[in-house]
Image 1 (spheres, helix red, strand yellow):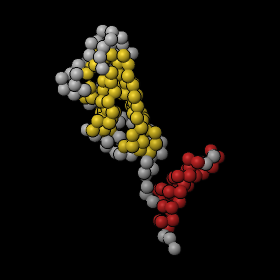
Image 2: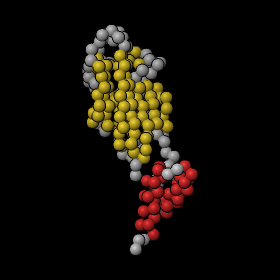
Image 3: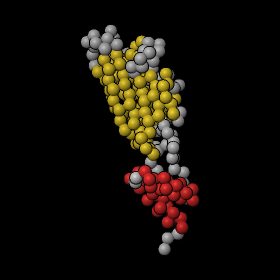
Image 4: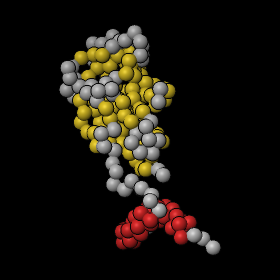
Length: 186
C-alpha cells in the first residue's frame, strides 16, 4: 500500500511532532528513531544547532546622532555570538536556519541630550517596528522592545537610527541588539 520511503516519512513527521509532548523517559527512544528515520530519508534535522547573539554599541561613550538620514547601527561590542549569525562589521543578523527567533532591541538617551530617542527594526529592508520617545525633559530615557519573528535562511534583521533621532551608549551597554532561535521549522 505504501512505499518504504512514504512509511518512513510518515514515521519521521509523526515522531518530530510527538517528541515534544512525551515524557523524558520515552524521548530518548523517539529521538533515536527520529534520527535513524531521517538518515534513511536523507533529511537533515538541525538537532543541537543553536543561535544566540547580543551586542551593544558600547565604547567610546557618547551620543550617536541625531542624524540627517537614516543610519544602520553597528553594535561592535559583541557579548555573545553563538552560531556567528550576527555580523559586528555591518550590524546585521542573518538567519542561518528557518525558524522562529526572538529579537530584542533597546536604546537609551543621556539626560543632557536634547534630541529624540529612537530606533527602527528592519527585516529584509522593511521597517517592522519603531521604538522611540520624542522630546527632551532633562532626564535619561530608556526604551526597549522585542518581537518573535518567523525567519527563513538568509533573512536579515537589523536596526536603523531614524533621521532626527539619536541614542546614547557607554560601558554599561545601554543601547543593545539581541536575539536567539526559539525553535527550528522544517
